Amino acid sequence: MESIKNYANKVGMKMRRSKTFKFGCFMLLSIFLVIMSACSSEESSSTDKKAKEDKNDKNLIVALTGEANSLDPHNTTDTASKQIYSVVAETLVSLNENGELEPLLAKSWEKSEDGKTWTFQLQEGVEFTDGTPFNAEAVKINFERVTNEENKLARYPLLGPYLDSITINGDYEVVFHLNSPVGPFLNILAFPSGNNIISPKTIEEGIEAIKTKPIGTGPYKIKHWSPGSDTIFEANPNYWGGTPPLEQITFKVVPENASRVLMLETGEADLIADVPPTDIERLNNSGDTKVKSIEINRTLYVGINNSVAPFDKAEVRQALNYAIDRGALTNDLYEGRVKKSTAIVSSKDEMYSDAGSYPYDVEKAKELLKQAGVKEGTKVRIVAAGNAVRDHKAGQFVQTSLQLLGFDVEFQVLELNDYLKTLDDPSKYDLFLRGGIANTNDAYDVLRDSFYSTSKFNYARYSNPNIDKAIEEGAIEPNVENRKKIYEEAFKEIKEDAPWIFLYEDTVHIGMRKNVEDLIVPPTHLWNYTKVHK
Figure 1: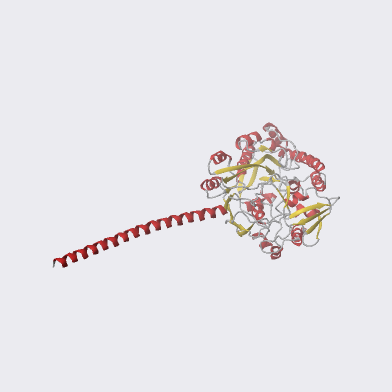
Figure 2: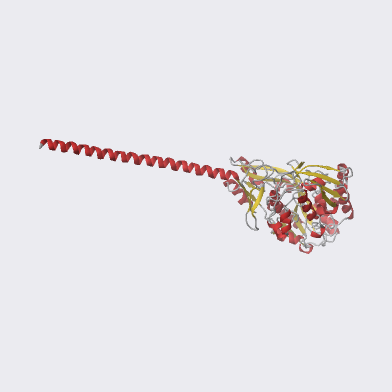
C-alpha cells in the first residue's frame, strides 16, 4: 500500500507541476500577445500618423478674401475670378516674379519689321485636361472668341481693336496679324485674363460651361466650384511641365481678417491673403508661420463719378484730393507699409513716371468748393467691394476727411456682385473705392480700361479727347521710350483733371506656414501655384 501511495503522490506532484507549467506558459503567452498587440498598435498608429502627414504635405489650403464672380477667363475683370481660372488655364507667355516675360505655351516668337505680324512656335505634345490636344487651331479659336466684338466679352478691348486676323501653319505655328503695331503686345498676352487658352471643346459647349468649369492645360484642374462654397483643384497627372508637387489645392473664402489669421496660426490654412499690418510681426516671430511682403503694381484710389454734380467740375474733384492727408494715411493708418501715389500706376510699372501728388491743404480745398458753389451738407455716397477688406479703412479715412470739408458722407460696403452692378449704373454712386492693377505690368490696360472715354470699365465716367488720343497713340507706338513720353504727359493731365482721389501704392502681405515654399507672386499679384510645395 505504501508503494501505491508513494506512486500516487509522485503522479500527483507531476500533475501539479504539469498544471503549473501549463499555467505559466499560458501567462507568458498572454503577456507576449499583449506586448505584440501594443507594438502592432503603436506601429499602426505611427503608420496612420505618417500617412496623414504625407497627405497634408500634398494638400494646400488657401484662405482668400473674395468670392469669384465667374470663371470665364475672357469675360471677367475681378481679381477673385482671375485667381481661380489662372490656376487651370495658361497663357502663351507669362511674367515672372520680377515682371519679366517668359515663354509658357509658346516656346518662342518673332515679330516683323513693321511690328504688325507676330509668329509664335508652340509647345508640342501638350493636352487640355479633357484630352483635347493643344495646338495652333486651339489658340486661333480662343483669340477669335475674345476679339470678336459681337460676342461683347469684357476682355475684348485688350486686343480686339488691333487684331485683323489669326492664321496657322501646321499644328504648332500661329500668326497674329495686327492692323497696327501694339507696343505692349507680349505683355497683353501674358495677362491671365482674356488671354488664357481653354479647351475648344468647352467653348463649343457654350457660355455656361466656360463660366463654371473652364478646361485648361495647367498643372491643376477644377474638381469643384460653385458660388458660396470652396473651390477645389486636383493635380493634372498629365501636365506637360512635369508632375505637380501637390495633389490638391483648396480655396476658401474668408473675408474676416481675424478668422484668416487664426486659420493660419492653427494650421487650418497653409496660405492666407492680406495679413493685417498689426499681425505681421507676431506671425514672423512665430516658429510656425511667416509673412511674405511684396510691393506690387497696384494703386488704391477713390474714383469720382464725373457725370454727376457737383463732381462734374474739375475744381471740386481737385478739392477732394487736397482734403486727403496722405502722410497720415500711409504712415499712421498703414504703418508706413504703403507709399503715396504719384501717378495712376505704381512705380513698379514699366511705364511709370512721376506726375506728382496733391499736397494736404484743407483751406485750399474749402476755397475751391466755395468757388464751385458746393453747399455744406451735400450728400455723398462711397461704395466699396466687400472682398477688398484691407482697403476699407482707407475708404473710411476718405469718408472722415470729406466730412471735415462739410460733406454728408455715407460709406457703404457691398458684396462683389452688387458692387459691380452698382458701378454699371452711374446714378447709383458718387464715389467708389477700387484698386487699379496694371495686370500687363504696363500702363496700357489701366489707361484703356479706366480712362478711355468709351470703355465699359471707365467707372469714373471720365472723358478727355487728349487722353483718348494718348491711349491710342501709346498702344501702337513700338518704341518704348516714345511710349513712356506719351504716357508721362497723359499721367500729368489726368492728375490735373482729378477723376480719382489718388491714395497709395500697395504692398501685399501673404501669410504662410513655415513649410510652404516657392509661391510665385509677380508684380501683377496673381499668385502662381505651379511650383508650390510643402
